[in-house]
Length: 118
Image 1 (cartoon, rainbow, N blue to C red):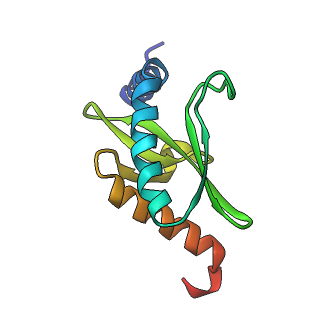
Image 2: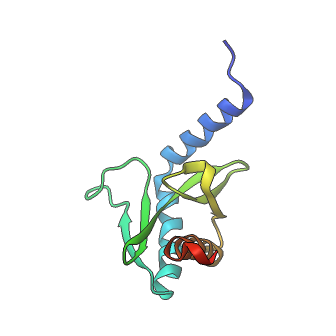
């Protein structure tokens, strides 16, 4: 039985993500700094002593609308911000430009807050 190239790539990306949680935390902290400036509320779900989960998450919310953001390894040795609920299918932005990622997160949250206006 041979694995498809895509299956191997997914396994490698999952391995990189789980192996380097400190990279994800660093990128989530950069995103958190930009989101706080814009007034979004945050819960950092990546302190292992408080939240023992395998993938670091950042919960971004306002009132009753929120979004969990994760950082996952992507092809080419890079990292990307994703909606945690939908995983790789919900790419938000490549890591490295926290400002662009904050705008992408804000767009998703505003669409959820005001669904009839989009």
